[in-house]
Amino acid sequence: MTTDDTTIDELLGAYALDAVEPAEAAAVEEYIERAPSAASELARLRNAAAAIGATEAFAPPPELLDSVLSAARTRRPAHTDDPFLAVYLSETARYDALLDTVPADALDVLTDNGLTVHELIIHLAAMESAVAAAIGRPTAPDMTDEDIERRTSAFVARFRGRPLREVRTLWRASVNELAQWSQHASAGKRVHVFGLPFPRESNLVSRAFETWTHADDIRRALGRQLSPPEPEVLHRMANLSVTTVPASLEMLERAHRGKTARVVLTGPGGGDWLVPLGFSETSEAPDVVVTTEVVGWCRVASERLAPGALARHVEGDPALADDLLSASSAFATL
Image (cartoon, rainbow, N blue to C red; front, side, top):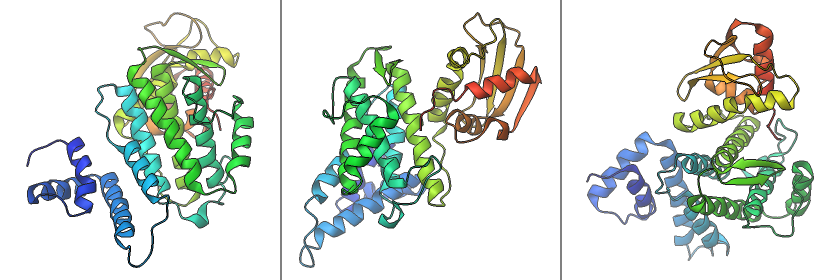
């Protein structure tokens, strides 16, 4: 059998039920050996199938079917040539799969940003639903506050004592609305989110960036290994964080107009950028060159690593490098 990974992904459910042909089974088995996320998804599907099949022993929870179908809709690989939407769908799928593995007794564990695991999950639902409202597809229409901290507090108050599946259902619905809207929105379409006008593409990458950051917050709180995105996804995140540096420097009043930096990010997903250090023209001859590893750069940009803790090589004025790194996280949230 010859097919692509997208088609094989869609066979996982049938494979979990032993409802595939031998050639299809061989293709799935080869795929899960090289794709850990597929192996995790298969285990989840088999557990769900076992619960549904054990009807003589117990009745499955009434919400099980809705939960499984909702997860399947969210995780179905998108047939899209849009690299920005692909970035968003990749990180939301990885986050959703991670939550399947979080035990109930870990929900009260404190994360690095001061929220518990449960509260952090609620925070992401608050953020995603705010974006859904901004594009005219509200999923929590009675929650209208756009201030991030106040909105998070209101959502935590609403969902703290309720089953986790409820807030996950809201989050998935919000993800689906943004994904569907993005498939039809024109390139560069601006959306005002949290007081800032984000182009469609930047909004998708920004949401993926925050989703990855909080997924790693959860992994770190549970003592698990951190998990960077795939290289092509990481490159989009790095590009967003580097190219917003001029605006960040201006916002922080640390701009150096007329000066240019070269940012070299190494490792899979890295790249090489020339950026002005403020609202000015870019010079071909940089005043400072900063070389560092791409994952570390992105963790500084998301305020999960202090700029001073980032190993880097600097050529030129070190003060410019310090301002550059400090500005990289100007648009980070919680």
